[in-house]
Length: 144
Image (tube, rainbow, N blue to C red; front, side, top):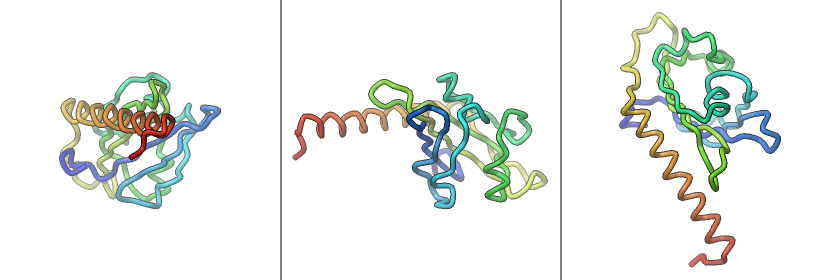
């Protein structure tokens, strides 16, 4: 988060029926933990459905951005990076980083770049490898 100048990072995982994404980890706002969003809603849902990364500034102006979380938390999402998250080679969720504003009239943060998006994409790959390793060592009873 620090290197990206992000205000928040969240991991969204799909439910078993693949109808909703749920925030299972978030920093630094614990009030966002457990937040659910329909898979057919917002830019996070779009990233999950397409399996493609997204990097966008001025997100609050995008008609596809779901404003429900912004309204509930009393903030405005200015910039977003979202990348698919895989477990065992299967799409299971989305990792997102955002820059926030208190209101649309506030000065804009620095925004994100393609380089920032590639960092989050690499983070997603490393996280997948760590989860896969943990599952494999547990299944094969190789824990030390």
